[in-house]
Length: 254
Image 1 (cartoon, rainbow, N blue to C red):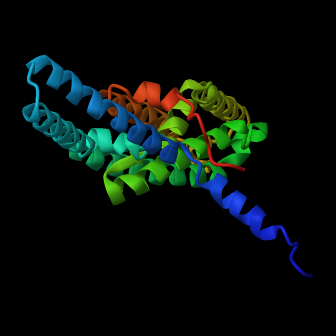
Image 2 (image 1 turned 30 degrees about the vertical axis):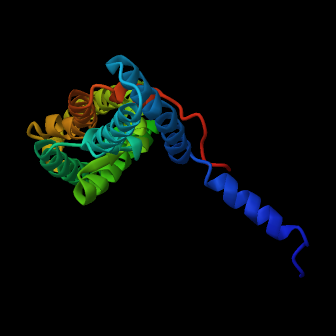
């Protein structure tokens, strides 16, 4: 089928829109600001020194160069530069703990799911409630963050927003309530096994002999570290709360 005659124009329009992102708009705003601010500061400084003639021109030029130099130095500052590129840099201690803790979270949740499958008969109709989706969500967010942390020692602002959104939702409370329900279900099953003259610890050693406590705590480990990571990022970047909740003026065209 032949392409419509105006397909090239549509593709060009789509390409232009796809480039009209928050990142690009930010840089244009910076450019316009620099064009206005640099000569304004230089003019103000020149006026203050009360020099006329050729010296005034020289001072104006020198002032412009000083402003540009200081601006470039500021943009090279990692904290400023990272925010402009929608990445949040983190310190080495936070990076190391982030990598190790998220790896542990992934491992613990994987083990928890396997243990649950072995003991699913005990929990009856509590199997895989919406809480499972919420657990998967926070693990996915943390795993995505771990990848960028290990590669660039930074966190994408979009991932930070997702982390903040998840923490501020009621999903962590849903998980906690669900785990309490599992614990109550185990208590009910244990009593029923005893009524029938059976030993639940022998039938389900994964939960017996006090292992139910560690079983309940495993998913809480993920929610607890999600909050810890947010607190660590907020401590290192005081403006991160505003950045995580702010909506960009322009987003990528659909």
